[in-house]
Length: 323
Image (cartoon, rainbow, N blue to C red):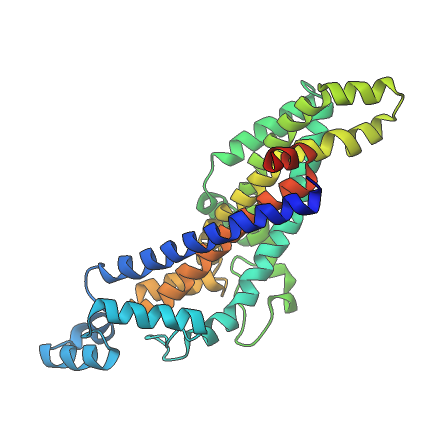
C-alpha cells in the first residue's frame, strides 16, 4: 500500500473516532458542571440571595428548564458557534475567547517552537556520547526537572529573577487591547518555566530512541556502505528515533495546557487558562463549559496529529498501519 493510501486510510478510521470522543467529552463537561453544588444564580447574587430573587434569576438564566432541554440547546449552540453569554461579564462567550485566545496561543507556540528542537538536540547529543559527562548532565537534569511541578518552578523564577535580581518582570500583565509582543520581556519567565518542565521527558525519549536506532542493523549496514556518520545520524537513525518522541510531544501538549493554567495564574498572564480560573471562581458556567470543550478538542486532535506525523515520518509505522 502506498504512503498516501496508508495515510488516507488512517484518517478515515481515526477522524470519526476522534469526533466521537469529542462528543463524549462535551457531554461529560455539560453534565459534570450540572451536578456541581450550587448554581450560577447563587454565585451571582451572593449574600444578597433571597428565595424570590434566586427563583427570578434562575428563570431568567433558564436554569428552571429540564436539563435535557438545556443540554440539547447547548449542544446545538456548540455546533452553530453560539456559545451563549458569559454570566460574569455578560459578553458573548466567543468574544471572550477571541480576546484571549491569541495570548494563550502565543505562549503555547513559543514554548513548542523551542521545546522540540531543544529536546531533540539534547537527546541526540546525549545518545551520541552515552555515559559521558554531557550525557549524565542532560539525563540527571531532565529527571530532576521532571519531578518538580510547574508552580514550584514558577514561584522560584518569580522570587529569583523578578524580586531578588530584578532583571525580569515578576508578573506578565498585559493592558486591554495590547499584544504581549509589545513587551516581550513579560513572556520570558512563563516560557522558561514551561520549557524546563516539559523538555525533560522528550529529551530522554529521543536519547533512548537514538541509542536503539544507532545499534540497529540498517544503521550498521549504512556504515558498512561508507555513508557519512552525519548522514547516518540525520537520515537513517533520527527519523526512526522520532517515532516515540512524536507521541511524547503530543502528550506534552496535555502537559502544556495544564502548565499554562499554572503559569497564567502565577504570572497573571491574561490568557484562556486564567480566564477559566476566573470563570470557575465566578461560577460562570457557560464560559467554563466552552473553555473545557475547547481544551478537550485541542488535546484530542493534537494526539491525532501526532499519530499522523508518526506515520508520515517513520516507514515502519506506515507498514504497521497498512498491514
